Length: 278
Length: 235
Image 1 (spheres, rainbow over the protein chains, first blue to last red):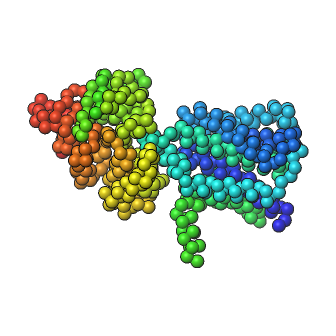
Image 2 (cartoon, rainbow over the protein chains, first blue to last red):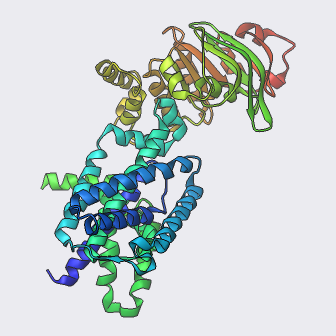
Image 3 (cartoon, chains in turn cyan, blue):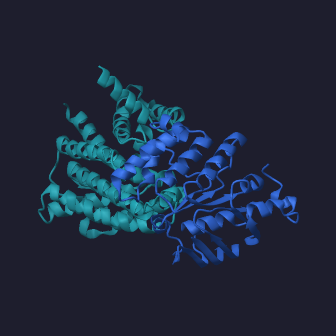
């Protein structure tokens, strides 16, 4: 595989983790536009751990995920009072807060960025991305996922069934933040250089876009969305200057035809059935 | 079984329920009747633990803490909310499974889910279909079946006939009447007064957050002083 395609594949693996971080939170009906910030926390903390403290990468990623998970739970508390667009705006505010913190945090290079990390290849990235995708798919078959879906569908009804909706929503936020942090850690160690601009609003939107485009009701939708977002603009290169416009039009078209995204429960079931029949 | 004394519920500056006293005996079917905004649903939601309130609500002598739906469900109060509260992205079976969420007798609870699918054959036929694809009447059945699976002592039904065709409403009311034979205690919130009074034991009539009259269903139907304003609709 050429270095170019390996780099695209690594990017899509990192994006898959970011998309899954949004997907987990979205499963409870909460939209986060601040997951770029959790990615940034994971990127900076894991880089500091491996470069300054000589902690092995795997351990650094786990510590970063736990730390970001705690921050996610703290952020989720005030967010409990907000819904829909108001919650999304609050998470945008949180994202900008974190970005400007790293911009002024000279210990980690401030605006000049941070470097010195050991490079990780596409294999390590996909080991994490694939592993977490499988874990989320297993979670989708569990009782916990039913609880998350119940909160998504009707929070009042979920409370009347006896669910603790507060715990469910906070846990989802914490888990999403942890996955975003792993995405950030891998991003930092793949690019061996990070700066606050890597984890801004555009990054958060990219995560959401991957989920919406690929399918927001099944975990493999995030995989489809991530691969499309990274590879499609590259395949459209022959149309040169028009490629981004063509990509944008394609995106709008997909969302008009399939509001739930490309992959949904029915399509996934059909694909599984055909494979079994073959 | 349930006693309410001096219940007051406010939405900000607006008093939705003002000094309501109410009593429901074990095995009774009692109705809360009144027009939109009379405070019926607010009372049901307060009993279920969805709203903060002042005054006293007690189930079998134990005072209920306001705004604690989970605890109230575990005590035996199940509410089928207005709008049904169907979990739309789940299948019929998954919705029913959520009904046994608080039960600790796991194997008996799972068996009860199967029994419920037999009791409501239409739900059995749609077992693996999405709940959102059910008709309004079928969704109401699903909501009631799910509430019954928590084995409630007191079932609160908030406007179950809302948006249903007359035939479906009639069959729904017939089903509610049968709950009496099973010994279930029911509080039915409704606007269709005449139809409701045919199946309940007693009723309370509410107007702007206060109880204006109450009594046995028969007495209320025969009371000449009750104007068409109260019993006019819902033939």
